[in-house]
Length: 138
Length: 57
Image 1 (cartoon, rainbow over the protein chains, first blue to last red):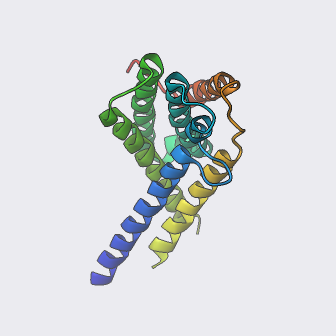
Image 2 (cartoon, rainbow over the protein chains, first blue to last red):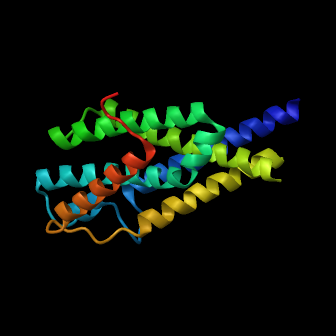
């Protein structure tokens, strides 16, 4: 029982590290391929362009999450319909934030945090679904 | 231990997809930022349709 709790803790910690790293990468890029914001910032200080570049990075993270989920949509619908619905709704909430971001050029930091949370949560749900599927196939 | 390894494997798959997506990005300049945004928006719209995302819900 104790061993199981320890594994659960390790599992949770690993998940947090991975997902946080992925989101940071999606927003900020890596040394070889910087984010749109970092690239634009190195070329201009125009606030409108910088704002658009920040929005582009968020939109890029959204598309990346979609690309992660796309191969598993049918599997999710067939085997985890509730989860598929939750993911669909969360994508909708994230997209609403993006639409506001696009319209206003900026959003409150609370919305930015909510957006990151939606992307993180969707990714984690997909990861756990893949894990479960892998177990079943063994 | 098997559970942990399975999850690490699943997360690795996701990380790999993310890395591929991020690394596929082009160089962004003030001149092509608009084009970059339009391309991302078109992808997001197409994927939203596949996923069934409805922002009016």
